[in-house]
Amino acid sequence: SCPFGDQFTGIAAHGLTCAQIKHPEHHWRCYDDHTRKKCCETCQSILRNDKGCEYGDKSDWCQTNIASQNDKQMCYWGHNADLCCGSCSKYGNMAHHGCEYGDKQSGCVSSRCSHYSSSHRGKCCETCLSAPVIG
Image (tube, rainbow, N blue to C red):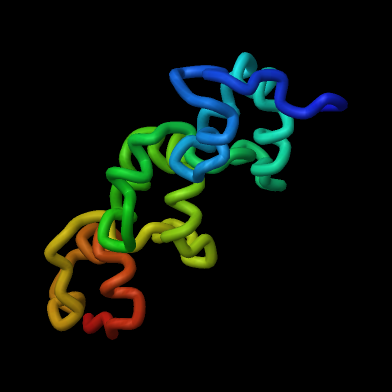
């Protein structure tokens, strides 16, 4: 609960004011308990109904490195899908199970899909999704 709003008007946490934390590139700071208490009104105002991704990305790294459709492949790497839950969900397609973030490698060519091995087609899952498989 937050009956008195943000508890701090100066620098609240990590060199930022609560007003600055309200900017999308700083939402992730609300995952920190200390910040969430000092800036309770701000954090409640940006809270999303998305379990595990309540404040969007959990690092500022995500908005720099997964900044467009062209970068969505990075969501497959390590824990990036969780760490960058906001960015990955923005560029992902959860209806394509196993291919949520498109091709898993670069250089996929749709006209070559029929010649790719099943493993290679799996890595080029978006490009080869509607390509006919011969043989």
